[in-house]
Length: 275
Ligand code: A2P
Image (cartoon, rainbow, N blue to C red; front, side, top):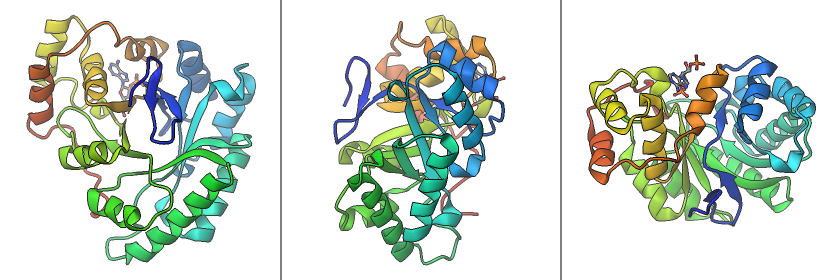
């Protein structure tokens, strides 16, 4: 669901239309710049090893905690009930906060041959406990395909509210995205710019010219018009601002379909079942 300010999750929690991705971001000044540019939603993960740095930025930015939307994730090497709870504690300690707005299961399985179902069940029970205790306002997953989600949905008490996926023109993962939309699970996009790999594609260049926008802005608008919340990264204030400036134009449905169905481009090579 969508409000004027952003997306609304199944449990009523609202989050801004865009978030700031922090994978490989190591400098506090980049986080402070993103907050100054207007981002209020920061996406990190235990695996990024930057939670302490982000915690310092949160402490130093002068913005009230309740104005921020903070997400972290439990890494695939830390799945299971106790490990998930421990990972959460470590995340909030490093971030220097009392609660998270959202906590996600980063990947559904730790190894290709792992018997992932029982471990994912236990992991999800820990996520539900954190949610029930009010330590986190929303819980969800990342990089989960429909069969992983079906396993969780089969006998959970609290449904995943979000699935964060690689999503950009040239890798729209339509089967998973449509499954999530039909289930009321909000999709978020990591690498919405295909880590720049799609920005030189002729279709992106054509549409950038047609709409008077940059290829990056076309990618981000493509996310929003698919009801997907983009999490772009940038180290430059100018591009951070450019990436927020996507609310003054609409892609035609025809162009959205052209971007959704273009040949695979810019895929990271990452897949939850191939290591
Ligand atoms: P930079 O940090 O120099 O801005 P993704 O979010 O898909 O993972 O992509 C991140 C990459 O995209 C970074 O290399 C970032 O470089 C680049 N980037 C971010 N915003 C833009 C933009 N508006 N135009 C071109 N490149 C961008």
